[in-house]
Amino acid sequence: MADKQSSSAARKSFFALFLTTIVLFVLSWLFVLRSTGRPRPLDRKVLPTQKLPTVFHHVKSQSSNGLSRAILVNNGGREEEPPKREQGFQDKDGAMDCNGNVKEPLKIFMYDLDPEFHFGLLDWKPQGGRVWPDIRTEIPPYPGGLNLQHSIEYWLTLDLLASEISDNPNNRVAMRVQNSSEADLIFVPFFSSLSYNRFSKQNPHQKKSMNKVLQAKLVKFLTAQKEWKIAGGRDHIVMAHHPNSMLDARMQLWPSIFILADFGRYPLNIANVDKDVIAPYKHMVESYANDTSDFDSRQTLLFFQGSIYRKDGGFARQELFYLLKDEKDVHFAFGSLKNNGVIKAGQGMRLSKFCLTIAGDTPSSNRLFDAIASHCVPVIISDDIELPYEDILDYSGFCVFVRTSDAVKENFLINLIRSISKEEWTQMWEKLKEVEALFEYQYPAKDGDAVQMIWQSLARKVPGVKMKINKSRRYSDAVVPGKDGGLRSIPAPKNFW
Image (cartoon, rainbow, N blue to C red; front, side, top):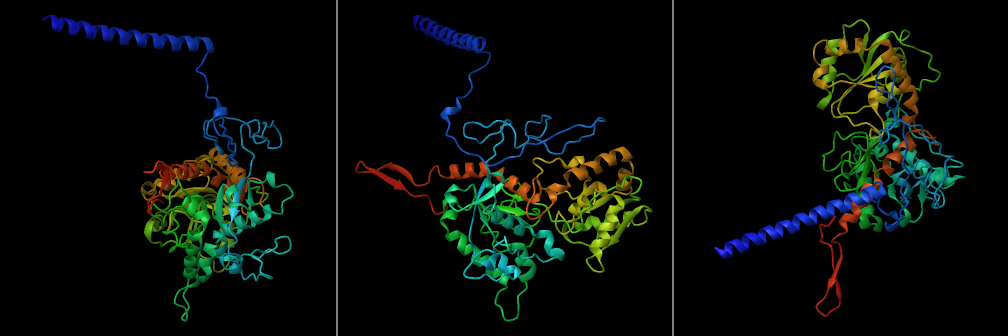
């Protein structure tokens, strides 16, 4: 009995001591809060300094009638004015402006691939062992027609070459560096979309098409490079904008950052929005300069011209054709490149209030960017579409999104479009004119155009890439004590990457 009482007393004493400790800890914490007003922040001097890649600062606004006017949205969700890059203080390293944005350009190491992978595909003939054309005196032209819509590889490569002859390279979004150890990312200048468009057909005397041969040679080259081996390709940029480009190589180069039009023909483990970058098509129609149209002058309510019968996810085009073909103010017709089809489509878009962008063989199409260039409010019917820069760009301010299951219901789509007021349409039309420059490819690149926006999208991938690389090194070539008292290295397993 005495033992039980003694044990009970000991437990009570221990509990009282524990409770007293907790109370004292809470009181001491409250004292610190009262004295300082907040917990002490982390001393950043104890962290390693690192120059980060350039990031954009963005704008969000709200219309008077409550409709979202968000266009470029920053992470904090605050409404603020865009910073002026030439103003604001610099920190002691000269890397930051007053808004905390990093002004360092994205540093890109570009492989000097044989011209057969890039400008040689444009029939450029190098002289004297040169790898690149001297863009100060000659710029090989890119072929027109449908080739142009996937020409991103051409514009990005030209921009990197231009960075080497720029008068002020530090004002650029991205610049080429000659030492791969200094680079944020590694650029692979293979014109894969052009290779597919021009050389995917196998000639009778060939065992393989030139497109397949180039992909095999590229994989062999890349996987043998020290830059690839260091990070397993995670920091490499591979362009495959045409949905059918890199069909053979994509499964071997999957750790890299792909620049794509969409993910329609990629398994999720090979390409996804977290790892890769979606880039806009180059629009086919002419830009609508000096647009003086308005709601009333655009007399066609809804416009679509293109292929109607498509496989895969494009069944909605056929369904919508039968639902809308008899509506008097709707233009829904078959179209192609023949007989000036692009010019006619551009003219029709400029006379229309809304332009349909419907999934076809793939979730995306150039039609969205033709509509933006024509200031025709896009109506997007594509459930699996991924859009360029959507981490910072709010498309709901200038596009209408409709689920496919709703769009194919009788009268649903036409009633929805008719319900949008003149004032609402005008707000979206104004936003289209504000954002159209973000989708414009050109050389030389201009501030905020598609080339620079893609570099910015890549810059936002860099921290995640660095984290993956660093985490992958945790158990790579670990150093442990040896039997003789020295140190020995444990190599990474063969399937480490």
